[in-house]
Image (tube, rainbow, N blue to C red; front, side, top):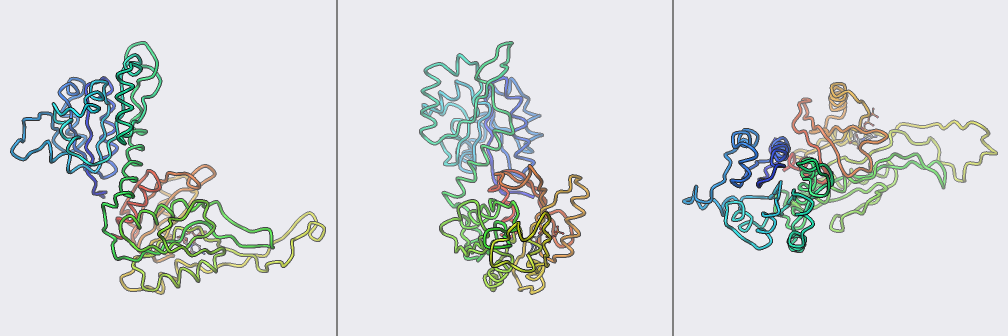
Length: 404
Ligand code: CTP
């Protein structure tokens, strides 16, 4: 599924150009439309056919090709993001000076998109006062500089100057894209829509000082709210014990327990265009909430808690079935095997009856509190309609694409 974004990957002449192939590949696998602009020097290190096969698009090099279509301007204008990897000392100097003596320089000058560069050079060149000043100039203009890392260089020497790994470059680029989407709000495809999002984790009190809860931080739900607001939606955020700040422009309703969340979301969902149940809802609550603190002297060495089932809120919303409303549920599972995880998701989808189910793996070290997420989205018939991994903000964007 396409994310609908156009990424220009500039490749300049350094040995690390061969690693740029993996940067291109990562964007293509995310569903981005990728256009490679390679300098002639870059093509001495990596072949044009490789870059064309991996990017699935023609690779442009020459400023004087495609002049009739004003290609040097068109490439820059169409870009949602430009990534230069590797960025040589020479390229960094040209960017700092605003030179446009090749296609890449022209495309960058003609663009207002975020620019991410991944320098790669020998340590001496990186530490040279000219390079230090050029990099500082670029940073002061908002260019995002990823790396360089410290490690083995092309020869037998080691030091600062090694191009960052492709995964790190892509992750930094996605953060830059998210930030640009939020600040510019370029996409307004949810304008006029009312989106209700539940986020966080419910807590079921046992007594005035204790509760049964879960480890959901609310980061994914808040990212959904931020992304929906940036795309023009009116957002009601049902906030269950969030560990992160709720966006100021959302209509925030605070809830504690599953029953409170049910009341709030049922009320907000009336007439909403979409409801996203990202909150982790307690399946059980204590049969009785004690008015006073439970004391060990009264309970002894073991304490048996009697719990009763909470209603399945998502299934209830699906059964109420408001026409035209898109209902999205989440399924957090600890199953390590990918096939069995998918099977669990399909069973849960059948039980819940929502339009889409976002499946993600959670565990002691996965999912919760992290800034990243990896999801598979199923439709009503259990077919996979989207697979995404990345920052919770980029994943949020992919989920909202389903509504938009
Ligand atoms: N959910 C809900 N009401 C509940 C429990 C969960 O609305 N009482 C919603 C969650 O917000 C989520 C989806 O249902 O969107 C799946 O939640 P999950 O905890 O993965 O599944 P459960 O229904 O609790 O099923 P199980 O415990 O068997 O995994």
